[in-house]
Image (cartoon, rainbow, N blue to C red; front, side):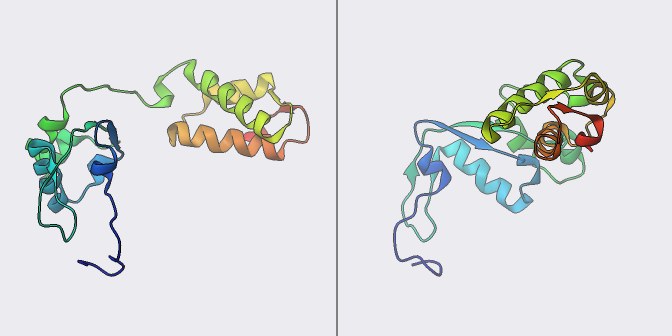
Length: 167
């Protein structure tokens, strides 16, 4: 084996995704030295297992996401320009939750219904809670909405969730 615990065959993410889609979350956080390896795999459509001696052909559609400004990271020398252009075939810009108007309410209601069902509890937002959701900046984006709504469902003692319950 090439590493401790290499006593059996283990498939990597590219190999497991062969013929399908691989989601690369927070691609902007990938260390610079690993970016060249990723680029090579994307360009050649080949990977090599750790400790392996032959290339394995893979056919993978990639979806990559990041909160980073990759163009700025390229200028700073933190992200490879060639990898950026390889990944930037189809770009979807999703604005932060704070800039999405009524989406804040739609998302909050979706998660309220989801968590209420999971916990077998009936909860709705009070008008004041809806105002709080609309006016909050949501710096943590959707993850913050998820956590605040889950918390509210758990701690609310009434059927109406109040701003206090949302913290």
